[in-house]
Length: 229
Ligand code: DX5
Ligand code: ZN
Image (cartoon, rainbow, N blue to C red; front, top):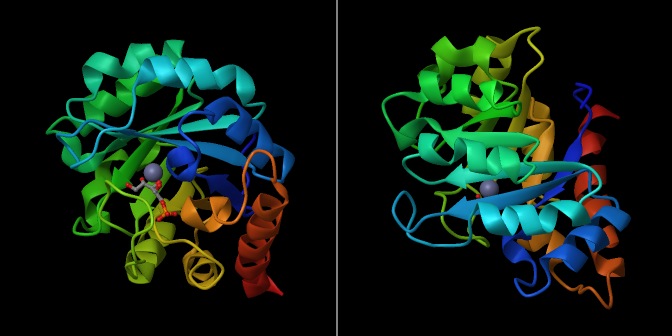
């Protein structure tokens, strides 16, 4: 997983057909997705339940590229090895998920994965100031986690602050929630490089008619990259 700051589109399978994850992952990759974003929810840290490591392991052979697993669970530490075994490339834990994010991030890297830390909309950039050298990715939530299809919350000031804090470190800034061709330029301009999008990628398409996935991915990418032209 070489590091760069080019725009990467990461479809969230929270908006895919839950009965057909393998084919959905293959379809969005064939249509231009850079990473696959996998949302794990426990009905405790967030008010919704999705699936756990066994489902991630089942999906893994259907993903050629990066499997980016976003844990919306608490506690995290008892499950880190299970997600490593499931084949996660990036494992992201929320800074709000417990008092020992430092230990959690050490354990994620120790298990051989890239470590991500996520911040809810109500959490300031300063919450990750002491772990910048322990992470490969910072995920800025632009919705309150738990559900797809929510309205984008403007976090551009926080994204810019994180971009300054990161400096030359090889740390991705990922944006999660309400990303579409309208909001993508705002977050790209502020310094984000990984754009998660669920409903804005999967809308209008299906495994049997995947071309809209490609149209949607290209529209988000063009809007984000347009910032730099
Ligand atoms: C929210 C999830 C997101 C979500 C994004 O809790 O972490 O990844 O699927 O969905 P959209 O793009 O529809 O806001
Ligand atoms: Zn997510």
